[in-house]
Image 1 (cartoon, chains in turn purple, green):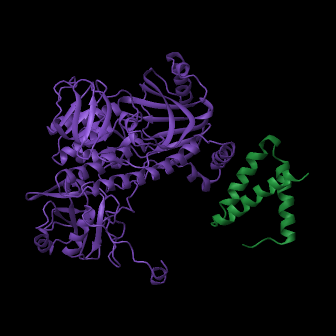
Image 2 (image 1 turned 135 degrees about the horizontal axis):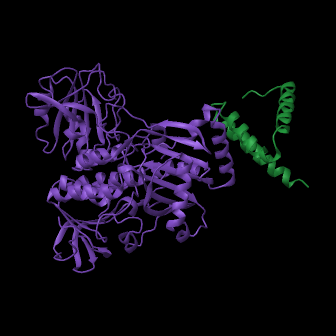
Image 3 (image 1 turned 120 degrees about the vertical axis):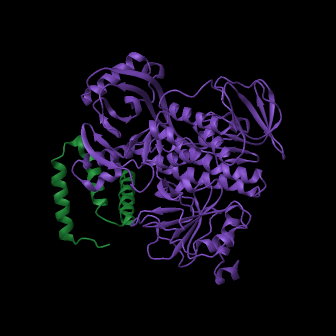
Length: 555
Length: 67
C-alpha cells in the first residue's frame, strides 16, 4: 500500500463500500469488511496517520477485535498493559482501584498505545488483506444518495459511486454535515490541556488522577503511561483560558516541570506533543440514513473519562461490517442494517451515561455537585464506604441486551454468566493443532460467519453437526473441559467457571460474527439453533411478547 | 421508616449543634455535605434519602418565601 497515494486513478465505478475517514474506526471497518471478503475504498484527507497519543487507552474488547482483524500481534507487542490506578486528593492517596480482570481471558483489561501507532498497525494490516484501497490526501466534499446507491463528491476524480458509504470521518464529519444531521446532547464546560512527555525515569504503568493537585490547584490532572517511556498528562484548565497561551511551549514546559517535580521525577524529559480537549456528550439519534451509515466520532462524541470514545467506535465498526457483508451478498435483508443503528445508538447512550457520570465527578458542572464531590474526596481519606464513588470504571462492556437479533433464553435453558447480547468472553484455550494442543483463544476459533459453540464433552457433537450442515456459513466449534477430548476442537482449563457449565452434558452458544451472543441454551436442538440464526440475520423477527389476556381484551 | 422519639430527636439536635460549633464557619457547607453523604450511605433505601433531601430543599424554599 503506497502511503503517498492520493485520489489519482480512482474511477466512478461502483464500489461496494466507501469509508470516509482512515482513522482507527474507518480502518477497523475496512479490516472487518476484508475479513468478510468485501473490498472497500477508504478516503482519508490527511497525508498520513495522526500524531500524538490522542485516544490512547485500548479496552480489552478493542484488543480482541483488532486481534481478530489481523492487527493484534503488533498492538500487543507495542502496547503497555495496565490493570488499575491511583487517585489522589491533593497529595494523599484516596483510592487504589483495579480494573476487572480474569487471567483466563486472552487480553488485559486495558492497553495503552499512542493512537498514531495503533493507526499504523491497522494500516499495515489493511495492506496485507489486499482488499482495502486506502487513499490519503483525499477529501470528501459531500454525499448524496438515491435508492440504488450513494454518490460521493471527491476532490480530484469527481463523483464516486458506492452501494454503501460509512462515515468514520470523526467529530467534524463532512458526511454528517452534508446530510444535515445534528447531534443531540450537550458539551461540557471543562477544558483540558493534553501533553505527551518522554521521561527518562521509569514509572509504574497505570492511571494516576489528582483532584486539587498542588501542580494544578483547584483542578484535576490525569497521567497515563504509554510505550517508549512517554507519559500523557491532562491538565484541567479554565474555560476562559486562551488556548494559544496554555499551549505555548514555555508555558507547557513550566507545567510539566511543576508536575514532575511534585512526583519527584528526576532526570531529563521532553515534550513531544501538545493539544487541547473539550468534553462533549452527544449522539445522533440514528446511525443509518438510507445507504449511509455513521460510526465512531462521526456518530457520537463521548467524554474521554472512562476511555469509551475510540473503543466504542471500534465496536461500531465491528458490529456493522458483517451486516453490510451479508446484505451485499444477498444473504440477509436490508432490515439487518437497521439493527446496526438500534444496537449502537443504544450502546452510545449507555456509554454517554457512564462517561458523563465520570466527567461530572472529574469536573463538577454545578456548585452543588462540586461540594458533594469534594465531600467524597475528603471523606475518602478515612471512610472506605465512599471510595467506590471515585472509581472511574473504565470502558465496561455494553451488552446488546435489547437487540431484536437476540433469541431470548427459554425457561430452564439459561447458562450461568451468559446472556444473549453479551460478548462471548475471549477465553484462553488449548486449541487442537493436528495431534497437538497449542495455546489459543476462543475468539480466534470464531470464523467470519456465525459460529455455534458447543460447550461440554464432545460426544454427540457430530450428530448435531450433521443436522446443521445445510446451514452454509455456520461453523460448529466444540470446546471440552479438562483433559484431551478426542472430538474437541479446543480445551478449556478445568475449573474455569466463566463460561463452561460443569454439570450439564452440553450447552450451545450461537455467536454472531461480531462475537455477540445471539442465543444460548442448555441442551438445545438443531431446530432452536436454526430459528435463532434466522432471527439473528433479521430474516425473521422475534414475535412480540403476548399481552396478558386481561390487557388484550381491553386494547 | 422509624422516626426517633422526642428525647432522641432532642439529643441529636444538641449533638449536631455542638459539632457544627466546632467547625470553622467557612467549612460548614462542606461539613454538612459530608455528614449528609455519610448518613445517606447508612441506609439501603434511596427513596428515604430522596424524601429527606426533597423535604429539606422544599423547606429552604418555604423559609425564604416567609416574610
